[in-house]
Image 1: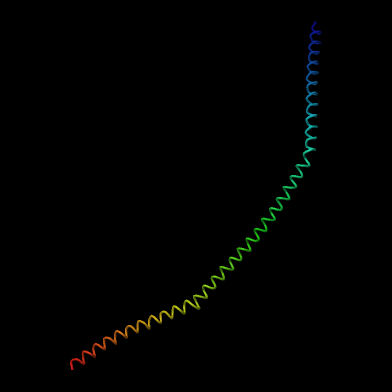
Image 2: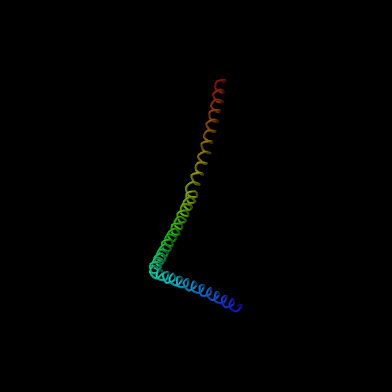
Length: 138
């Protein structure tokens, strides 16, 4: 009887092994089928994805080119502004040296002449009063 129990246990173990092997085989077939479906889906959609990536690459290159053109134009505009500022600064210095400074000196001279004229008028008026008083006393 002990060998019969051993044989029954061995048979049960073999049966369990066969069930596990059959389940593993079924799962492997499912996995293989899923992999085949995934491969088929990839083969259908991959060209469109690659085309989209190529379009994105072309758009990125065009955008980079546009940004470079804008950057170059901005640099040219900045240089133009620098030239304008330099010209305005030069014009301001020239005006100050050639117009404002001489006008300022002329205004100082005219102011001095006017002050001298006013002083002379005051002196003349004082002298006139002095001479008139002297004539009236004599």
